[in-house]
Amino acid sequence: MPLDERDLAHLTRCVDLAEEAVEAGDEPFGSLLVSAAGEVLVEDRNRVGGGDGTRHPELALAQWAGAHLPVGQRASTTVYTSGEHCPMCSAAHGWVGLGRIVVATTTGQLTAWRRELGVADGGGPVRVATLPVSAVLPGAEVDGPAPQLADRVRALHARSLRR
Ligand SMILES: [Zn+2]
Image (cartoon, rainbow, N blue to C red; front, side):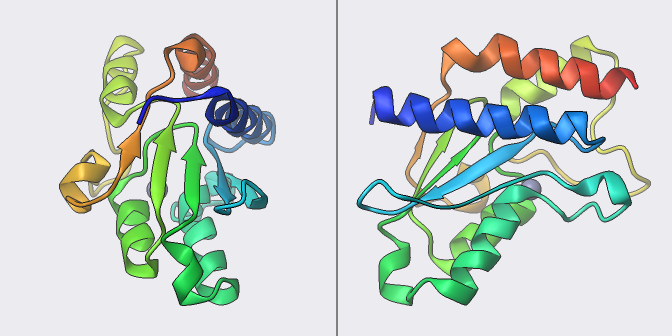
């Protein structure tokens, strides 16, 4: 499905959250969970700066849905995110049964940017594969990226990786 104005507004909010994350010493990722009626149910940003590398916003949203959203309502939600889910977050999305995913930027773009910026993937002693959502959730509906937001997201990653 092509992105509309409402999608772009939600994705812009995700990038704003990613910027907040960088300013707080975390990594530049932000996400929203939106209901079928278009209401933002919850939003979060990356919080890995304290040393817990699992504190990704897409995982937090999936866990929020698991705790607060009736099973029957989950597939009609949309998760907006500044950067495509990692394998951990893709799996959480699938296990909880959330719906459409809309990404401002893809895993492929991030991998290319990290290479351009001279940073290897992974970071830790055990590398997590940089799989696209479709490799973990073959049936998922994934839309994006939004080319309008690419330069801004790339700049946030450059800022985050330089420190
Ligand atoms: Zn993740």
